[in-house]
Length: 610
Image 1 (tube, rainbow, N blue to C red):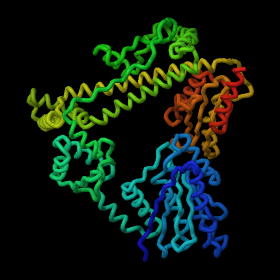
Image 2: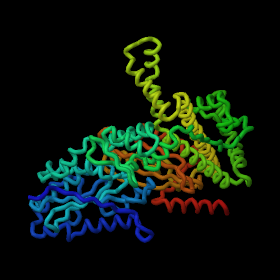
Image 3: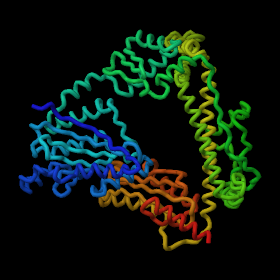
Image 4: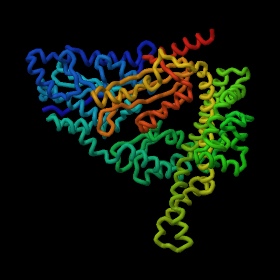
């Protein structure tokens, strides 16, 4: 008897300059769908037997030239490479690992042709359980002593998530699932996998959380790496320090290298944290990048004079952050009057507003130069946000202690000052955490609270600037797209071009589930195009579709995005109306690919420049 079912995993990567990810995927598909490998043992059986075997396979699996070939989330198996690459391009994840190649093999004793259909079912069930959002093509090869199925899986799912297949995932998820399905279809499970699974009591997430807490506490109690190691060992942990640090707790079957826990847990980071744990907090500053645009009394909003964050008084900071937390824009003045008057004011002031934005951001009064300047300012803000987020990560141990103390604070106070003895455990825990902050980091709760709040407020302040710059950028684009207001009967309207309602009806009435990605351009606006991705979906138990609409600038910058999955039909239609209004798009041309859309924009630009 053999050792049971086995699996091998290979990763298909984006190639060098000479071989793209699509080329590498196609090469693998050509191999796994090779007729000689798939039907060598089938030549001796009748067509009727083949049909009976295929009946074992679920309805949505297909056969190609009588071979045992199936697919998931693929509408046309002959066009599977293009469909996989389409998803990757949509999410901008075309590099690195482009696909996973999994081979599942049976014992020789169980490799009779009668098991080919069940092996396909096993592959299909495995995809449904572990990778429900990922496209796959699979084929059973019958040309060896061990019946085996090749499964080619797109690394990027229809939800945009990428497969990350580390050893822990394989041991805790992949192997147990294959063993479970092996039993379901009468195959021998792999006994070694089950021993490994039983040995690992903690999930990968639980292990990482536990190790981070152990390391944080050990750093608080240490003055150097040797002392750090000693503290961990005294807690019953196995520790090895070489080029890397690896730690194994008593309830872990294998040690884990600390760099897997994040950038704050590498050996160099641990040394730095020990050396600097008593140092003052590192300062940061988010600067102001939004230009002061004033003097437009009729405009629906007038930016206030914006100071640098560090130059604001405590009161000004508090007022600005309060407005942001309420969802209001500190750059906008309060609107008085009724809605109709406001709408009229906005329309009257639109050209003046855009002119002022352009002249503010461009020394030559050029819309293109103004847009470039806004993009550069957004990039600078992005870097500043990254810096602040790094500090939040760097000081996360102290901030986490502060957050726990916040939760305990009221009950600790009631025990200490109101003699409510039932809160004694909370009081003692509060005292313990306070001591950790003081002795481990040389900080008080007040210092940590003020620093954490300041960092979070700076991110809020920076993000508000990003939103304001985006609004100004969109205002320029909308202005540039208002050159022609007349209807165009030779084009289709935006609702029809997006095609969500039609696709939803086809799915519901006729079970036609299509994957569609198109790019919309309009003669009304030569500065942007719209990407539309429609994918099959099940909503409230019925076949349907999900449509994602993304507005892109001519340069390829994402301006805004929304999905039918995240809102009601009424809200989705309203978003389309907003797009039509905000970007001045009255009618559309449907393009099959992004290059065609950009060429269409350039063509319109050349026409208008004549």
